[in-house]
Image (cartoon, rainbow over all chains, first blue to last red; front, side):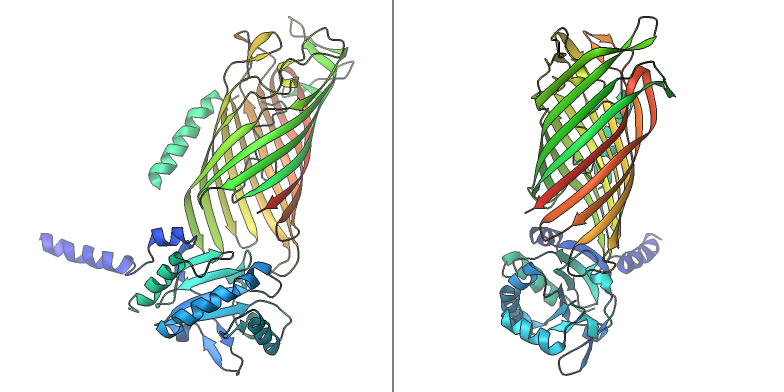
Length: 179
Length: 324
């Protein structure tokens, strides 16, 4: 009798409890807000004209970084963001830096990113279908998206991308099971 | 979280029965901004200039029409420094520099008849009462395009303002509320809720002040305990979608002050305390990376003053904030 009651309780628990979530303390120490919602899907176009969709990246951890060429703190954090990219690129992290400038070409944004020390591919919001809900209040803003396509955290404003706290979050993000 | 909310609500509930009005109160309006009670988070410095005018006498909710007029004016330059100790804890200090000008005095005779003594004038200028506040955000919920925060406020207002100002002829002390300070150490407790979704931000704030006995002129004086509240909506009108350049917000708020009667030498002052409600439109411009400018106008739309008193006509203020 008791066992029969426990099974549905266990199933409900299993269904409603996230199988994985970023450590609250680590998020707080890194100044990252905790979120838990499905990341709205979008399609971006890379410099070769190839489409990249968020949905297609399921199973990989994504660092979605929204920035603009006119944003001074965005430019200042490029060198550290590049270091982070080099460290985690081969380890399962996808970095998606998206510039929201409305009137700029792919060639121009590539050159601009390179001049700031960014060796990673950059994307333009105006060449894709990404919603401006991702940058409601300002740039830079960075989303930590887990392997299931859920937003686990958000950093509003610039961050020290070389910090121990940020690296811990990313290590956890790429280490989780895709489910 | 529920435990924290319950504690904060109980604290506010405790203060409500002690609340009672409406004089030119500096420390009760903390940020003096678009949403007057909302304390700022992060770190920065703000300078604000406010003008308050009282000319219309009231008895309860009834406007009195007397033969002669009286006028009280207050100019307050306020320097507020705020520092984010952690993501959740902010401390702030408010230093006001005040000028008060009295032109005529509303005197209430023993039989309750009000009369304006036009020969009473006075001007005071100097440091007001410094307030120190702590803010703790105990609840935060974020989604892609919304964020909800609830914070508790705790503070103290120190008796740093002079309370011995006299009329121009030197014959009498000015009324307690016309002095630069209250002469008392008062305690501040409040709760602040904020919800931003897309371009709209809603703020609701409650702030209670528990007063103690101070000295005004040659008597002991205690201002009534006070409750301030505000409900404000702020909307980003430009740009519609984030872009380079300034951001412009318009705001509309409803805010009020409730105050208990004052006590002079431990005797209740019949013509003190009450309730005033304001309608407050405002505009805020985030002009450059670190700078925020704002203008607010608070029109008094409702008075219910105990006994006969001068009621506030309006407050107008402008401020500049530099965010570090």
